[in-house]
Image 1 (cartoon, helix red, strand yellow):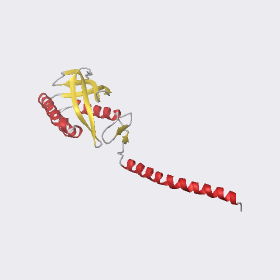
Image 2 (image 1 turned 180 degrees about the horizontal axis):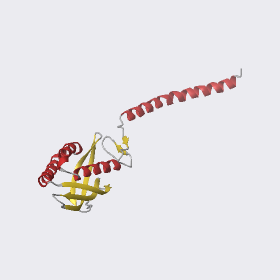
Image 3 (image 1 turned 30 degrees about the vertical axis):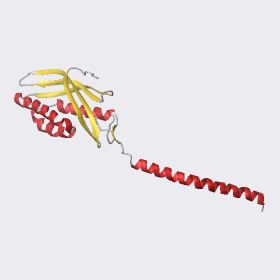
Image 4 (image 1 turned 90 degrees about the vertical axis):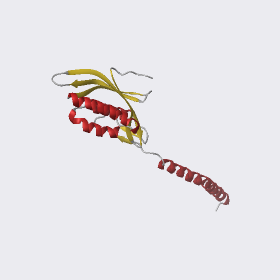
Length: 189
């Protein structure tokens, strides 16, 4: 046996053992930190509803643009298509979609509209023409034509804009701001 060669190999083994003693605890700590950070991360849910072309991503307290635009269009069509037979369904459905902070104000406005619709036997329909998302104000803007049909052949068409702010809380998107006005979208800063 060659003692010189053995000492070189033995030195290399001791050096490797020394490096292992240092790196093993560092790797163990890094693993624990990684596991902890991954376990505390809230998941992002990604779905592709049939009516949307982009994937809808909903996180614990936020959503992507496609999701907000989809919800904005849904609420605009719901609020814009009112007939005497759909009134009860509309009132029940907006409970789930509206944020509690604006629910009562919007419900009062909808009930006023509903009373007018029932008294005058009107049918209101909405034909969306565009859906935009204004990043600077975080608003979804739905623009289109509102058609009001009364008794007989009375029919009026007007351009209407719906503005919404979608707030996500615990994976539940809700409208925290609703504004409906006649005319084209008005961008106010």
